Figure 1 (cartoon, rainbow, N blue to C red):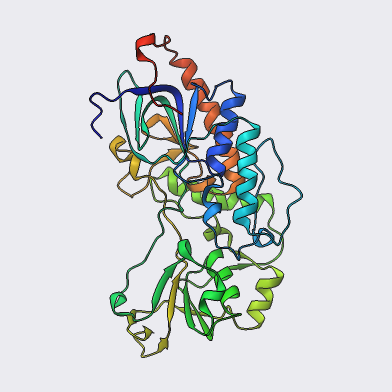
Figure 2: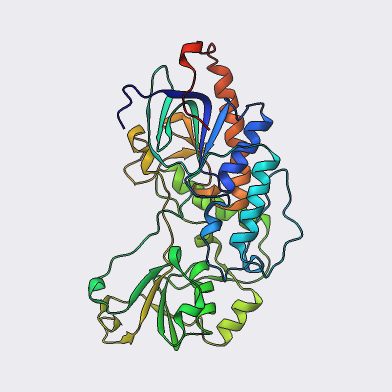
Length: 373
């Protein structure tokens, strides 16, 4: 975007994203005394409240959701576990935004964050430009599904889908389905699809780690520490689930006993009829469902040159190592609902000190913001 002649709105903090991480951050900004009329703004590209939850498949009911923690200041109570999680959590997020007057602007697409004048950051969007003294990036991962590439992939005669556009189990009635991926989504897809498909096959790169028994605070801290170590070194973050293992619920235990979760090692190539291994084994399929996860949505930060040679953004807590004005919430070790809550509070605490240290005189009337509601 060419900023010449573009009128710019001045705020102290821009929050990008209105999922769990963004709303938690906005809540703590309000508690710190910043006003959504000029102290901070929350920008969200989604059409409505709910973060990534609004895009989850209808068969993922609220009762199947693992580890959903309430946003700070408002509990999520009285929910019907049989309702789709997209509806339950979407409505909850909407009530939360209204209760705390967060005034999320949507839909707004952020294209780039650049260096501005006088130590400020310029946030370029589909709805104008904001100038900020600090930035909280809470964009999550949902908009960047990871599709692995394998030889012969383009020759497959069936359908290939990703978790991001998983339609629910009815779509696979009578079909032979290969599910790729050893995470929570892969397990959930398998257990659902097995009830309608003609056959299912589970393929993962590594043998899945199932976790039985209690998972206490000590284990949780150890798992988060492993993810935190990667982002401190500037490596792309792993999901917390990848180091905690898959919890063995009653449903998972039943699926294991029924053979639904018997796993095969990763195939070597894709053929028109299905997949094949170098040892001569093949599996025919009508659908390959890639439950292969997501990557952080951070390309809009590229102009700030924050990426390390390892491919990730090095962070200390939530603060980008190379720019104290930029905080990543819901990234790496805080990429969970409880982690996002804590990270939002921590980011605001650091940003508040930054704003106090870099206090600047009020802007003259001629510089009044021009981005309208």
